[in-house]
Length: 217
Ligand SMILES: C[S@@+](CC[C@H](N)C(=O)[O-])C[C@H]1O[C@@H](n2cnc3c(N)ncnc32)[C@H](O)[C@@H]1O
View 1 (cartoon, rainbow, N blue to C red):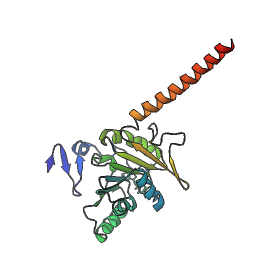
View 2 (cartoon, rainbow, N blue to C red):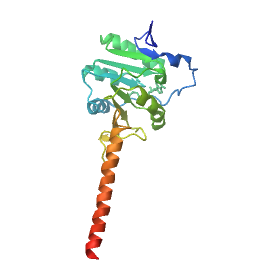
View 3 (tube, rainbow, N blue to C red):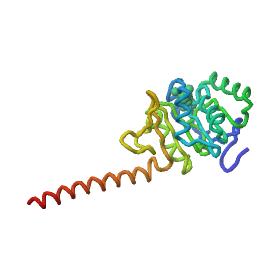
View 4 (cartoon, protein in one colour):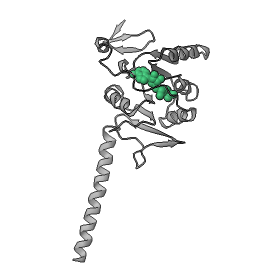
């Protein structure tokens, strides 16, 4: 059952072996209540993330599974996997998977996503809380591969730069906000690039002011 330090779980997902040593409570538990994203917001999240046939989508806190089904049925992603603490929601998602004939394309895990191995995901969707996102941030940075995208409904990941990267760093969909992050640009190259462009602009303005006052004097 063991493969390169990983263990297979009954859903076919590998969970990190080291996490099995953690007592329940050593990792964050529920970080958001159940509130479903409106369908147009779900579609926009997946559209902005550029979800497509090469992607594996993980919805952390999947609720009724709407992001998972939309990702597979409307965006044709390879696979969609959801995690939720709510057993009732998970069993209704499981039922829907069977009814829709999507066994193997959509998976649901009734468990704490802080214990999951996120490395197979190329797109991660979130509708949690800002504090929940902050707790997830180091895990996302450690486990997601370069080129992955993280898309968050209404709650930003504080300290990360969105791909939109202008003064309004989110996409507005009705009254909802969508934050899109690229890995590793969110915490690495993009931030540095934006900072240097900003700094360059500031120095140019200072130089121009000095030059003009020099001409006057
Ligand atoms: C706001 S709902 C989002 C549902 C769905 N992603 C959507 O956008 O429609 C947040 C969900 O996260 C789940 N949740 C919160 N903390 C969790 C955790 N640590 N592990 C698994 N699920 C969690 C809650 O049970 C809830 O169903």
